[in-house]
Length: 90
Image 1 (cartoon, rainbow, N blue to C red):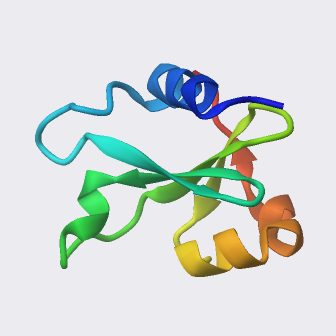
Image 2: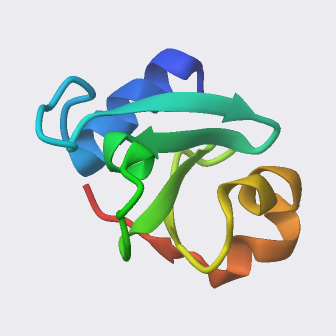
């Protein structure tokens, strides 16, 4: 099992620094199956496309979910939607 510090390191390797500017930054939101990577672009009202990423607690894998699956659903129904995600290489 990984720690929040591990998750931060893994997310940085996969998508870049948390404090990146221009909408490229992010922060982690912990939930049962791991850490949801809440990217800064998500706060833009006109943001479209992209994906939602998760660092899995058990494996340390980073998975990208299509935006058709809401962040709420990812965090509350993870086991039911995980098979729709794709691994992210970092």
